[in-house]
Image 1 (cartoon, rainbow, N blue to C red):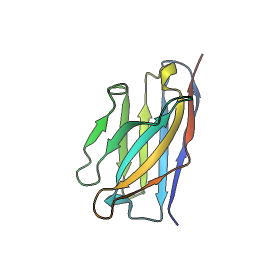
Image 2: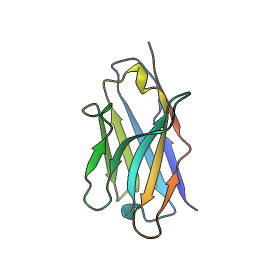
Image 3: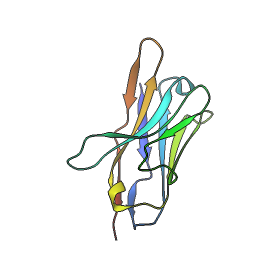
Image 4: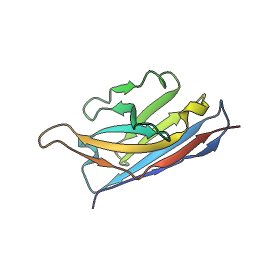
Length: 119
């Protein structure tokens, strides 16, 4: 049974930091590119950051670059998102995504964790 379970969300003041975690099970974690997405109220889900399975290369949305850091630990089947200098516009539900980029392509999603940045 495939599971992606996010944790670490919460309420934080502007300028603060949070670390999100995604625990994976039920599939070969190291073979999947892993990403964080977010969705704010009334907005479409957007890609925040991706870390590749092959070489660990990362990509970030321009809105979070230099503030967020994505990482993964294949030995623990976990992915992380270290968020710093948080802004109110970072408020959203953050989702963990696992993407198999070879054939047949498919993806798994977590249930999401709420991040609220407010004073």
